[in-house]
Length: 127
Image (tube, rainbow, N blue to C red):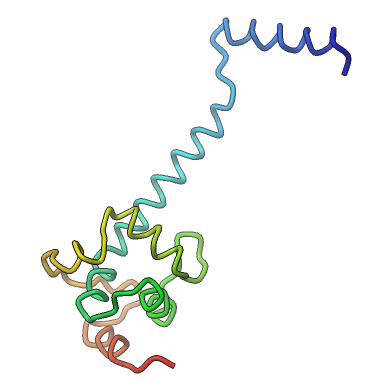
């Protein structure tokens, strides 16, 4: 690109902005939708996360292991890792210490399992 062509592009962009054109809008809209979906997914997992903590599953590694073992998908449908658990905790604005003190809630059954079935999974030894 030569300088006159660059100058013409810059001028065209400046004119468009002056006329109210917003650049990058679809990216911002998509980011907002993705963030909202991530928060909704995290909220759906809050009770399960708290139940794990109450059953002494308290490290990010063990939480990831148990979420994977229970067949709980991440927001993108993948497997849990220490980092995805950490992001879940940040999304829920929870730390292990504050979550343990939170009032007990009924654990949802996203896979049709009853509460005793979840307890059985929590109590199985890790391999």
